[in-house]
Length: 538
Image (cartoon, rainbow, N blue to C red; front, side):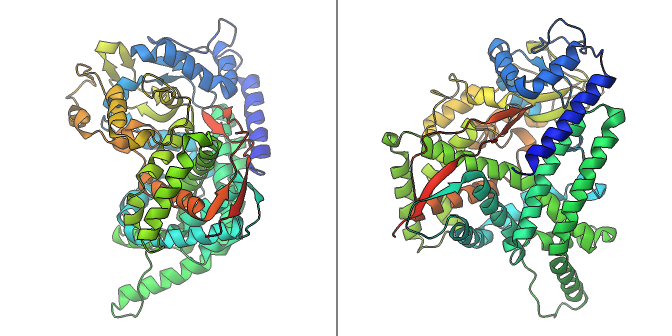
């Protein structure tokens, strides 16, 4: 947090001041949907956008209770994206399964991440290689990767939490970043890079600057975005050069050995199963030889870190706080520890993919934390790209071309009608099949809600109700056709982290759980909190 705090403050302040100077008379765009957050005042949209920096999530909840629970969409102002139409829960699955020719995600994410300003090389930042690596390669190889990742995470705990039998205080945020980053890079680049402290720290810093910088660029007037974008690009370039300095020798050696193996199949070398190799193989397979160089591959490796580190680190931190701040009398820790210890013993003291699949209560505890502490109050941004727009007449939904939509994730997750006692952390919630089915029923679409896009109805939305699964009982991983491609690895890593803690460490109950700070749509752990831990005698 030491780097992101001052940088985010400076960049955001610049964007606000420049916006006030250059856009004093902004007016809201006309819409058929009710608006939340605007006032009758001069420069109402600009003022509402500025207030959204700290009020957006409150407005999302206000609009959810007033409109979304009645299946009525509503519009929020936002500093970084302008007016956003919020989609009710019962309409989400039908909209989010529309084809990309109607509802876009790629350009929307590039706009959110401000790829054109923060990326040194636009091609890898804008193609699909990140999703291909996460969805195809890592997910496909989880069975082989799990023991390797488990071993690395255990070493990280020994390093950052220690092996002392005496109680000690641990900074949650700092240790989570270090452990998560090491675990992720076990699959991305392997040893020794996954243990290189300077490389890992630079990856962390780059991902934080990227998030803060993109938000500041989005909030600035278009004519002035090059100023802030140039500053962010400069900082990102410095951090990229640091990571490349540490990784280029590994990448160069891999390129040379791959070339030798392709030239002579009998060459005595077995390619490692990691992201560096998958990137190289993909570039060869696609005949994309201009990208087959050390600098570009190092940059692709960094981009994979950018999409993986912040959200996973945040989720692990909030998991530990939610679990260890829960009332001990509820028996969560005893049940979880017994499950983890039993499975660990049965698997011979080695964490395997099959062993992790047996951790049903542990998985429920993780999902419940993801529900209770989402990364953002709203999310799953998409842009309407169908020239005729999208309409849902049954619900007076009218989304013209260019409309940005999002989902009220936090408001849905805190809805008692969907999740009974929604404000409470219940580690057993998602372990009950009947409870999960009830949640899915509450989130399912109405049977007569037909979407019109000016053409044939999307086939995927016809079968939407038949393809529901537990991931859709909550929105932490998204919903629909573009659900998070790395969700399986995230669950594996979070299970490993929690299981290793429960088997090998005692943790004192958390008496004070720091509140997450709203920053636009994000939930920021400004005060990360501490844990008091000691190594268990076993």
